[in-house]
Length: 356
View 1: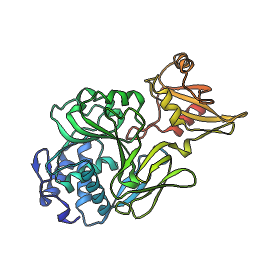
View 2 (view 1 turned 180 degrees about the vertical axis):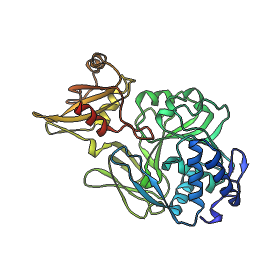
View 3 (view 1 turned 120 degrees about the vertical axis):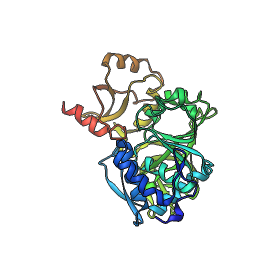
View 4 (view 1 turned 90 degrees about the horizontal axis):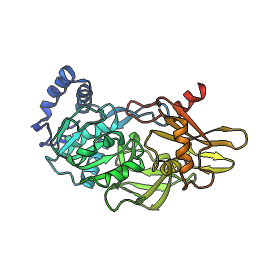
């Protein structure tokens, strides 16, 4: 990394860190820090070495985890785009409460170095604000962390939330938090988010995602999002995310094409059905399709650690299902299969139930 890529105002926990300091700080974190701090130190060393690229693991929520190569130049461009969109100025304070083993955590560090921010680390637990009382200008969390941090979420003036779907219940709860929260859309291949939408008062309805600067979007013949972002990736990214294209910079996410359930010739998006059900159920769940002799696939709901009777009563009480959407079976499992970052692995969880 070029020394010029490190802003002169970059600081960690209030202490200004120069390029020459970074090696010593990194080794200190690796040798003396907690496990999560060792990962931070390892990434900082990777960042300041002579290589123009670095390797990043994908989460594995929609398939096998894989390691991909990203250009540091593209990561810098992504950091600049985020800084511009959210108006992050030098010496703004930011919270890192995500693992530095994945792209979201790594990019918080890159943003701090490139934009000259003051970054604070806390363990990447489900309740990251539990031990802090100070406020931050910016932070990033997954929905599970947000759900466990609502009483203190106002401490983060602008928060971005991503990595997993946000439940209807959590969306409603966020409306009463006096801060600016945003849902993000992105992936490792696009170096975190390429689009955001507000989750504040006035955003109760299903607003579209708006793209960050220099991002072009379109839809392929499958109805899936295509991303052209030359400043952050050399290749056009063809996703498996079915979208409604609202404008050349706005889209609504409908679901994953590889999750689509074909039930008697009717194509159903489980994510839409989940949105309906999430108004009535707080227990972790997901909707999927399983083989059926008559229909080809039938809609089922998979629920974590509860009773079938309780869920059946809830399903019978829901009146806003569209035709064919009501689950035809309820599958209960004690614990979902999850990735290291907490995302539910639908296929692995379903496989475990069907094998039992």
